[in-house]
Amino acid sequence: MILGHMVIEDIFKALGDPTRLRIARLLGAMELAVGELAQVLGQSQPRVSRHVGILCDAGLAERRREGSWVFLRQSESRGAVIDAIQQLLALAEEQEPTFAALCETDRRKLAAIRHAREAAAETYFARHAGEWDELRALHSADAEVERRLAESLADAPLGALLDIGTGTGRMAELFGPQADRVVALDKNLEMLRVARAKLQHLPAAQIELVQGDFAELPFADASFDTVIVHQVLHFAPDPAPALAEAARVLRDGGRIAIVDFASHDHEELRTRHQHVRLGFSDRQMAELLKAAGFVAAAPSALEGGKLVVKIWTAKRRALAASPSTSSTPPALETAR
Image 1 (cartoon, helix red, strand yellow):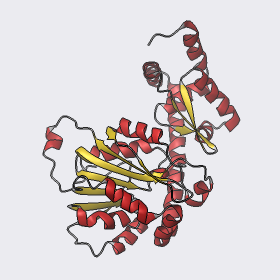
Image 2 (spheres, helix red, strand yellow; image 1 turned 135 degrees about the horizontal axis):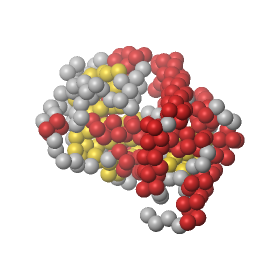
Image 3 (tube, one colour; image 1 turned 45 degrees about the vertical axis):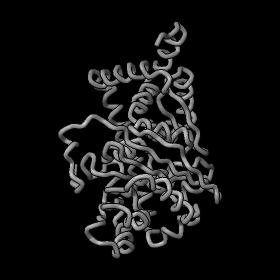
Image 4 (cartoon, helix red, strand yellow; image 1 turned 120 degrees about the vertical axis):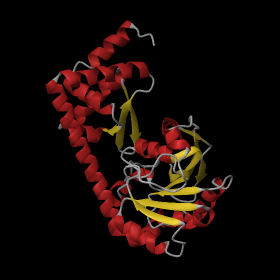
């Protein structure tokens, strides 16, 4: 990329502030809400927003508004420049103890904020475990969603199926008869107890319930043929690691089906139901799937309620076979 004199000058001016260097370093790890940045940096949100504006004006970051929240990420249009800046910041951490200490403190604060949000979501799940099916019905017409989801997966055998964030186990129950084997995963033990009660009629050899985090799946590479992520991704502070993990545990050509809300402005879902994301646009989801190694199909929309439900499907891009994955048996094994 060829940069003009004024563009270079803008970039160096934008980086000529300790706070903006810290923001740039944090953005190298993940997309963040401006409010999260303010908490991490210990500064007011208006002040952080001014720093964010300077980074955006220089083309080093870009905003994405979601309801009353504004998310910030590294600019995709200047990939080579961003990579060079991150390499420089990494070198600065290695050689400048003061900057390294600041960055480490920032990362610890960010981890604490995200842990608190995850804990709030888990508390919500535990409190509403017995009524989860009823709550879900308020958001969408489940019967129609399930019919459309089944149609979207009907063109090939399900094989070994992973239901991420199984909740009450409805997806495992629905697709269990068509799959060779089903693993229903959830982080919350009380939800797993509810799912176990619902799925007890299925043969024990066909269904397995596992406690685990969708950002760090406890399975070996290439263990599954199909992954379903049903009304779960809007709870993820950062959806990218969850989709990357889904790709990792899928075999070449394996399929993922994501059911979630289209972008919306129902702010009350953040506080009442601990939703971190107010749905996803088709562009957002396409970018997330591509980055995780998927080839996406055209999405499907169901507009039967206040919230539009979308179904996004994609196939994992085939990668070169390796000794560690080419002989992976269908049986599941713990990878971590």
